[in-house]
Image (cartoon, rainbow, N blue to C red):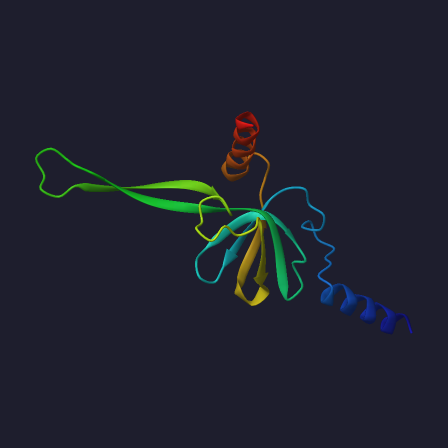
Length: 132
């Protein structure tokens, strides 16, 4: 009887997206790596359900800058990487939350509070408060 109850509890937790791992209720940010190569940063929940929820979403934006070089006919290209907030610069203005099909997720990592990404998010939020 106890085995049946444990099996039912495990199935319930699996179907409802609840986990017993460190990502449950984590106040920190996670990096969500997708099968298309895109990486999103945010606060993940329901990581075991069919659709992972991600809120307070950021992503990396790569810009290519062409710099003229004296003595060369072709300019050099330099890539610049910045952190972008979802919903700020997109033309269609999405809300700051995503539901990601779990089949498209390769893996999820918890980010340390001293990571460059988390520090950039904290700085972005501080700058937004100063602008008010």
